[in-house]
Amino acid sequence: MKAAILNNGVVQIHMAVFLFGFAGLFGKFLSCSPLYIVLGRTFFASIALFIFARLFSKTLLFSFSKKEISCFLLQGILLALHWWSFFLSIQISSVAIGLITFSTFPLFVTFLEPLFFKEKLKPLDIFIASAVFIGILLVIPDFNFSNNITKGGFYGIISGFTFALLALVNRRNARISDFVAIAFYQNLFAAVFLILPITILQIIPPQLSDFPSLIFLGVVCTALAHTLFIKSLILIRAQTAAVIAGLEPVYGVILAFFWLNEIPQARTLIGGLIIISTTLFAGCQSNKK
Image 1 (cartoon, rainbow, N blue to C red):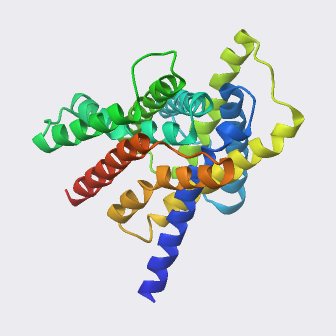
Image 2 (image 1 turned 30 degrees about the vertical axis):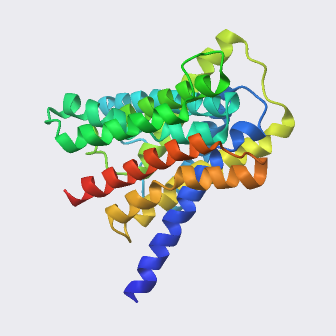
């Protein structure tokens, strides 16, 4: 019986991570601006999460204080910046570059966490950060911004940095424990935040043929994926979840190979292996503590 429950949780988290990795491919599937991709993703995700909260959850979406709503607003802005830079990285370079450079976020968490929470930087943290940095040097061929791989890698690193900030803000606001409300407000405020730059820059809107993909990205790859991920944590250990979550770039690169015929260079694969394995090791060490 216990084995069946564990397997159910493992299946759920693998499905969630698979969908997270699959989301990266939409940077290539869709020809519209990354701002519109993120707007569509967050808008349709917030609708799906609202319906889920009203029909299947006991979540009270409108029972938070002004201070808590302000926290959600900050999280929404960080989420919008994270996904915008992520999809921009993929559009400029490749799915592999975007996913691998985004996976550098533990490097930023390592150095930002002591500032946020007044914790000491440990020698192991410095070693992990150094290994991730070596992986970055391998993934990015040179520092010439006329090179699309370099430019895409830069925006991928920005995506990792903003995701690290989002993770730290979420940790600080951990007293707000209802994941449905957090996910709903993050996506809602991210969508609202994106309206301003889209209006000012007068970006060409997506075509009608793009909307099915945007709906799928928001409902399945975002709302459903986050719900599966959080639900799996009830059934499996956090350490197991951390290890499986580190497979997101692996799933994404494999999917890009079969769907888009993208074949990463050997140097990119080696650098990605260093970054991903270091991230998995860091996650295991963190959960042991």
